[in-house]
Picture 1: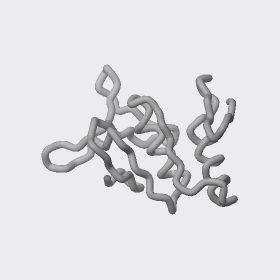
Picture 2: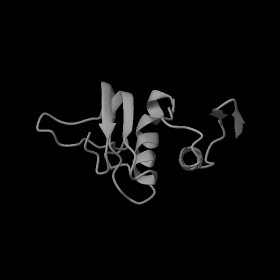
Picture 3: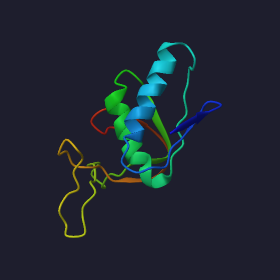
Picture 4: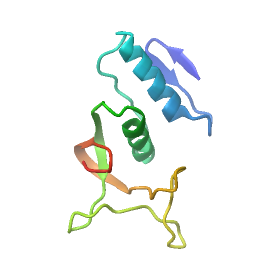
Length: 113
């Protein structure tokens, strides 16, 4: 991981980038070094980062631009599934929400947005 001029650049797989970066951001905010951090990630990673941010930074408002939790016509959250139809689960065995393009959305614990 490299930190240069207020940016973190990290491309290696499986090193806990979301949590590491979120903890660094929280630390910098507590120290007064930052006030409103922005995290830019590829569209395919938005759900992972937003979910981790909501879990790690409980008192923060997490806003995504360009993606939001997918819902059916009745307003129920849609979840990702594997090719065999089985649900995809995160590290804590919870189902992973499916995300779609949107203008912007606030993400809160429990998937409401």
